[in-house]
Amino acid sequence: MRQFNILSVLLLALVMGCNEPKKKAVEEDTEARLPAGAFPEYSGDLMIVPGKSIDKVFLGQDMSEVFKILGNPSDGDAAMGKSWGIWYLRDSTDTKKGELSIYSSYKDSTMSAKDVKQIVVSATNYRTDKGLRIGVSLDEIKAVFPNVKKAAVYLNTVKKDSLVVYDAEEEGIAFDVRNKGDHFFTTAITVHPKNVSVNSTYLTIHPGWDKIQ
Image 1 (cartoon, rainbow, N blue to C red):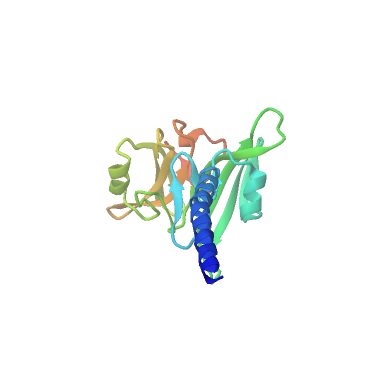
Image 2 (cartoon, rainbow, N blue to C red):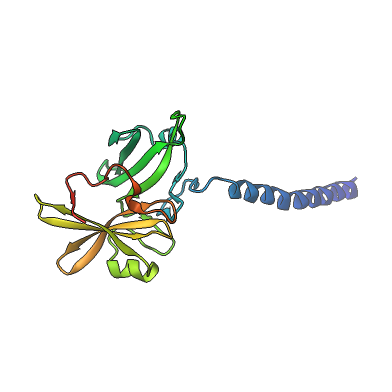
């Protein structure tokens, strides 16, 4: 009887060992088939993927799905079937740490649904795989995207301040850059479709700033 029990345990271990690779393969396949930007929850930095996504929000995503993830926006603007939704990002103490903004428009001529056309973030815990995040210098941006070009210049007459948008159009990522003394630093990062200018939106995401170039 004891020999039979030992044999049963060995056979059970063998069956479980054979099933484990299959289970792992199924899990990896499921993860691989997640839509771009649908990252699992985890602590630490949230990923910016040029031309694709910021965290769980991705280009081309139906806005009804965005609302399920983020809830209703805190602020926004809309005109001619196009809109910006703005979500205020807060930490555990309810302190505002930045904004996540999404530009959307109708998917097609049926005007029945809208999808994501651009995503903008201005919080420091979002970064690219190369470490670009809010606060990095213009030189650091150019080191990663040497083909980045000046796309627009905005002026705030009240604050007597200027803001320059640099766009790596081919890669699908743009950077809002401001000058503090002799230091040019990033204040927001935009993900947009590859080979499409960041300036292709109908509405501006820079309220209070006048575009001069």
